[in-house]
Amino acid sequence: MTQSTKATTQNTQTNTQRDKASPPEATTRPTPTGAQPGETDKPSAETDAPTTETGRPNAEAGAPTAEAGISIAEAARRTGVSVHTLRYYERAGLVVTTVDRTAGGRRRYHQLDLDWIKICTRLRATGMPIRTIREYAELVTAGRGNEKERLNLLESHRAEVLAKLADLQDNLELIDHKIDVYRGRLEAGTADHLWAPTPNK
Image 1 (cartoon, rainbow, N blue to C red):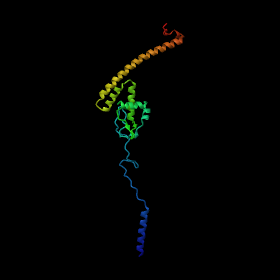
Image 2 (cartoon, helix red, strand yellow):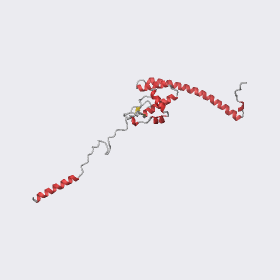
Image 3 (cartoon, rainbow, N blue to C red):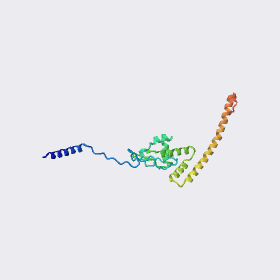
Image 4 (tube, rainbow, N blue to C red):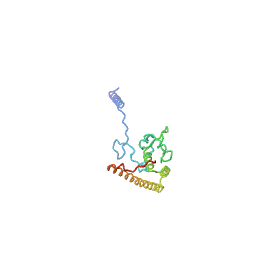
């Protein structure tokens, strides 16, 4: 073997060893136009979520899983009503969405559910009958096109609330009058002259 052949053989062996020792080049994804290096294709946090009857973004947009919600006990704590009341609202048809359930059948409440429950609670606190709340919930569930009926229902209830407030104000004035009488008599030392029922003899 000539010296030239030996040199060629040695060079070939050296290159082969270098290739085996070198790590393969890492594959990289091309950076999108206008993006900074290192940015990923994350979905935007801002979505065109539909708004609820409360005017807030619909938290259910994007179809989250039932496990993303909260338990009925936590929902009761956040809304200020009992677990029994939450179950009753659902049975009575006062909710506008079907409450999610886990694979084991446990209820999972989302923000939309909580917002609506608070509306129902306030309407009930102002004396709206269950049947009227159910009617309102049915109108909301039906969707667009019945806004006039919803307005009429709420305006009618508002008138009833105002009438009750007027009655309460009249009653409050009577209570204030009696308080003033007792304070005045006590300060004057004539409280024993106040009227008292006389036992029948």
